[in-house]
Image 1 (tube, one colour):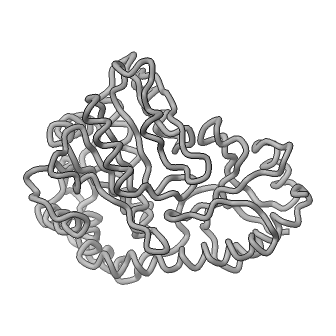
Image 2 (cartoon, one colour):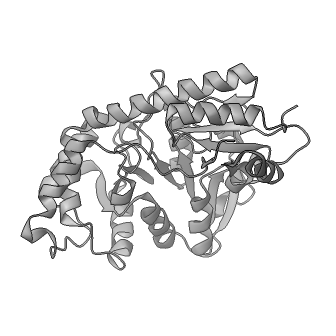
Length: 358
């Protein structure tokens, strides 16, 4: 039997040793430990963030707002708490990161799911119209999509931006896996939308792409007025990030391509190894274009919760039931590639030989 958790999204790949040593140096500085930045990045980090964003889409920095938070989950909740009122409607994908719903419901808003194409899992703009369109305040888009790994291309992102701006809806583009993409896929940015950032927000995180999930560092960019509102909400509950971590992230951004590409290459190897093993066993799955998850179909005549329980008992493998991401996911389960290739190959073999797939 293979025993191990393949359900969570916490990276197992260690960050660059150079980055860790830099953090040690910054931690040793006396001024690091009682320095409060009150949610604003240091001036030097702010400059590095600007340079990082320029590599994504070079536009005048004064035309968009920027803010920092302790990870993406924190800002997801503050976006919802600061921008939503009771009885507002939030649109989320029918298969979605669960905290979009949690944050909206905490703010007292109503959640409506929008459909995804059956095999590509792309949003369908022409099916976004709802009977409560006048109450829709906010829409979430995850790119690459967790849990399927689908990358939303630039043309589709622009369609969604135009639709949201036409209907005065805030589009939140969550790109926390932006650099973890395969086979020449690219994640577009709202910063490339003709300099018009009205009602647009985009969340970048370094937890996954630099493998520093415990550091909790994210930046949000977009509509300056919305950024200011969310920042004011965040100010009430946060005093900013530890100064040594800010300095280490500044160093990481200077060497971003080097550090992130090393991590992406490892995930690409895992995707190839796991897909090859599944292909040899004839299992149906969605191969990720980005992120590091496999979205796999459960056996016929079985729903996800039942399958996950039986799989755990028979093999010791713990995976994420698809219905945790929404009712539309009930015929799937998610496998996280948070183990070395050799372990993932064993896991694929255990999946195929567990006796649940006929």
